[in-house]
Length: 227
Image (cartoon, rainbow, N blue to C red; front, side):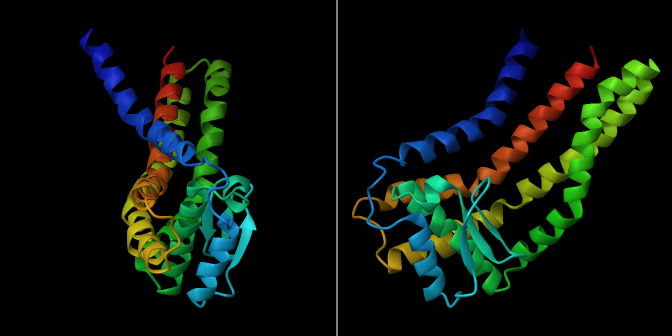
């Protein structure tokens, strides 16, 4: 019984942040036409005011982010075309990363380098985890499967740790860059500031929540291989 309670508590700690982030983003996505401008329009305006005319604003295939290599702020369709508080706030957060890049903010440069180093390892780890059950079945040796599992865990865990370590950088983009700009430029409707602060917190925790879900996936694969 104690193990079950502990397992439920750990699952809550892992899944809870992802649920809270999704709930917060969805909550302030309505009304969808709260602002007279879209997230993309605000991002373009803030970038221009920050002397970042060379940074583009594009539709994202997956996930809102700033690409420091291509110098692009990328927003998903609901943020790019959206006029909700969520769209406006997330756009400002991603512009905050572009400003970090302009200012040679060291943690952003470090994360960019680490992501480049670990991207191949993360893909390799995912492939190892997918192949592990088949290798174990063909070889009929648990040791082989556990070896593959260990390699997968190491590579995926490395990526999870990188994402977790980015929290100070994400908080800086939200509260040292985006929020002061939103306040100074009077971008927000009266009464929206406290809600925007919640959204900026959610935006900052997105990568950490993703890292926690990665750890949960690794635990799931471990359980499968132990059967």
